[in-house]
Length: 410
Image (cartoon, rainbow, N blue to C red):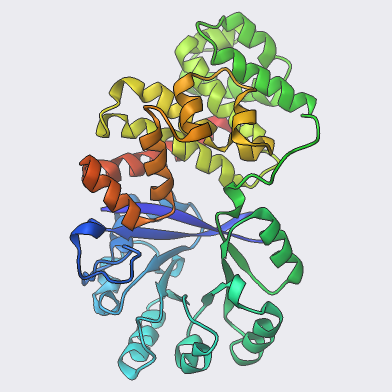
């Protein structure tokens, strides 16, 4: 099975829900899937529900709703018995492949009565009236903001379906997000916009960020001195506090006398890894919270993929590649320019700046995977002979690792 999570934001860029997209078969090996998405394989059960059960809702999405796509076939499976998690946090996501006819309408009513939420997507404007019987039962509708006049849509839905919440989908840039937010009318926002650089940043870095970048450059240089790192850490109260909490959590000891003492307790290798994750978390303070999560998930997922893709000796570099893959967004500057502020290996810089070099195939695969581009993922897995189960394990492990790591970083 393959699995990824896609966030839904509110106007303040807080994540309010996640969509779980899962697939059991390779797209290239399933000739019956004709929609080109690779998200569904026509099975009579729901892969997303299976993933939720396996990992638990709290691992996937702590206290937030989870949207799970279902098909015109799997909607009639025993979803209720299959779902061992809290149904009131599961929103079943349907589309136009489920027609507004009696047997589907009655099934949707039944699922709602059992506690599930209902969402619908991929409807064109002319289909709104046709699907009125389903829209009256739906809790959410995903709208392509590029094809919808939100002022008219807002009036339409408020008048006819006042209980439905509107989700703006397919948002490509932060500028688009700001424009849509200004127009008003949407409850949630979905798209790649939060991880796309806003453009050239003409402002100087703040002293705090400058210090943090100095620390990153130091620990990623060859054979850095722990005392030098401790001196820089002591200039940043947030990083200092995070270090002390981390050491107390990892090393059971009664007393820490100095910052240098705390740094030495971790040792050079662990200190480097902790500093990279903690500083990236702090650099994202003025960005959407999801950006920190994306950075850490990419880092661990890339590291976990090392053995799967035959790059076991590059696991440390893959971790850093994933971690710093959002540095252009954080610093609001082109990737090549952002990377100049850091002492990273040529392998990492080549992959991030020009999608070249030995690490680039992992970066390419990871980007397709997190977007649930199962057609491209399946193509790459087929060509490169990646093992599906190991890929799934690598991603699930990264989710669990993130949950534990963020506690220590925070």
